[in-house]
Amino acid sequence: MENKEPLRVIVSGGGTGGHIFPAVSIANAIKNIDPSAQILFVGAQGRMEMQRVPAAGYEIKGLPVRGLIRPLWSPKNIGVMMDFFKSKNMVKQIIRDFKPQVAVGVGGYASAPTLNAAHALGIPCLIQEQNSYAGVTNKSLAKKAEKVCVAYSGMERFFPADKIIMTGNPVRQNLLNANISKEDAIKSFGLDPAKRTVLIIGGSLGARTVNESVLSHLDSIRNSAVQFIWQTGKYYSESIHQSLSKADAVPNLYVTDFISSMDNAYAAADLVISRAGASSISELCLLEKPSILVPSPNVAEDHQTKNALALSTKDAALFVKDSEAVNNLIPLALKTVVDDAKLKSLGENAGKLAFKDSADVIAREVIKLARK
Image (cartoon, rainbow, N blue to C red; front, side, top):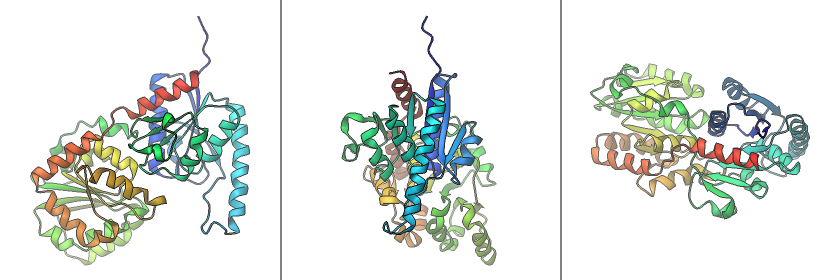
């Protein structure tokens, strides 16, 4: 019988939850298919992945890599480039020690030196692009990758068509296995199961406009028959509590800086207000949730607007520009959440864009490349 050596995979990328969730989901799916697989993550020092990946049970090596500083001619970029080359040399050593048969990049600073080094050492590479508009790192790496896993159609404008595989984005597994009833989910937030519920997911730093939209419509919310679950993000929590303490009480508004049980929050919601990050959109589609998307303007290549349009043009979400949100967002939510027909069509159309089992599909492609 042939003695196969254990599968060894390097997974690289991070910087935001939108890169880290998919990376960990892919790693978990590889372990499900092949429990003996060894997986090593490579991230950027000081970034979110250095905590999140070990918390998910995987080893991670950190690189001093960081993003270019604008304007690009800034003398500070000399140091950035030196760190990039230093990172590339460090990765080469990591690869020689770990001897992976395949490298996976999910975007973010660490992906570039890792996949460049892997390619230079003859290791097959796969990249996963979460957005409808490809990031700079992934566009530059596409020539070196054997496969490019994408979540949106029309990605041939960024990547060679023969390398593209339509897989969708992996999402947090616990969301799919949630079995709490809507009534119990609403009660877990101390709210009334008889009322319509709007869930507002402010991201971390990207939550400002969404938060301002709520604060400027407290009277409309208080006087409505609708209730709200509002995740403010930790960064804004204190100033929001100060603002609320000066206003009249709003008993139909549940406020928290962070929702740890997102499965309960989604189960409670009739309508979701969210930024248009790729992971959030994949979750909304998979759970068939009607949503209003407010793309963050502070992201590379305005990719969140392109993500939102990919849904809103198919009547799978409503779309409010960041610049118009403070005036329009809450009035639109209050109108939409009581419109049964609109909620039904938004949810059904979102569901049509969902990909089931994305992490498994990508994991099988990774294993196939490794076994070549």
